Length: 421
Ligand code: HEM
Image 1 (cartoon, rainbow, N blue to C red):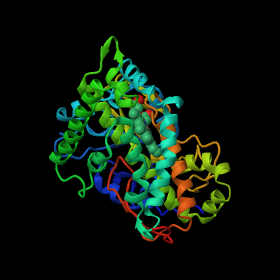
Image 2 (cartoon, rainbow, N blue to C red; image 1 turned 90 degrees about the vertical axis):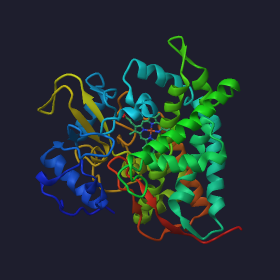
Image 3 (cartoon, rainbow, N blue to C red; image 1 turned 120 degrees about the vertical axis):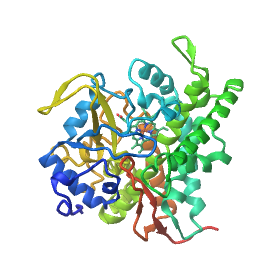
């Protein structure tokens, strides 16, 4: 069943992607606006609203076409990450220390640090974690089975990625809830339920920073084989990471590995419910469809809406000249619905193949380091949902996160026949 798009609710000149109000609109309206942009103004300029603590930005160019997003992502020498960061607003000085990790760096330092942590994501290193994924996913599903109803997001979708990423970086179970709350705040900018002031955001960053410093110090004194230990003991250019560098890496990992996968699982469940033929197909032969289904879920959900780059020398792209110092924002959500790339892009099709979506980025040097882990988490979570909660139904509309960065679902009620006790 294809999603039916309304007409764009906005005239072309009234589209303001920098405006948080825009991101409070229903998905179908957002989709209709991006379709119009792809067709009529594929590269469009937007003002940045003044956000407390961030200072007035210079505005940004929005890319809505797949091919342009791919170009920018893969030309990281001209479109850099290390000048002001990769979110639309420039990273304020106070936050640079906490968010100064690889996502906001360029090569060669980016590459060196990324290689360091890649050793924690090799198939061998992941193997141990992947066994954990299976056990934990089963516990999550079985843990709610007796309830008969619950919030799908916090009780099912959020649990597995939270536990796994905490395990990776050495956060004890007693602090998992705090990691959940802080990352909700950090990725909740724009939604008044999570962030009302700059201090809220700084408070969350400081809490995670403090947690990381303690864990890092502990791993330095008592090495184990987790990612935290690898990071604390490895050397780059003959030097160890400082504990501050470790802390910003830690914050990147817990934030990146948490809400994204949760969002994919939540949107995936909703899409399967809205497309019962697709759900029936997957359930009929789980293993045969799992690989393509998981890719389609991530394309459909596009949990990370955008990342930004900054132009370091004048460059032409699709007939447009970008100038040094300008901001360029890659809209992955729009690339993932580009009619020139995907046949029938508003159709949720778990057999779509090939499916070269940009859910994990556009293929450049910052391509999601956790993609294989995320793929496994999503797959195993659905396997356990189908097995333990086979008649699970979403029973109310999703409450969406108001954010121009994360396509999040905050809450979504579900019900199923209770079992066990
Ligand atoms: C469905 C789940 C996920 C999605 C949709 C997602 C999406 C993304 C995207 C769009 C990027 C930026 C890519 C670019 O700029 O080219 C990224 C980077 C990153 N992701 Fe993920 N991610 C997911 C899960 C994870 C997990 C589970 C982890 C780790 C536990 C993780 C760790 C990272 C890291 C460390 C980076 C920065 C890489 C770099 O700068 O070199 N992600 N992710």
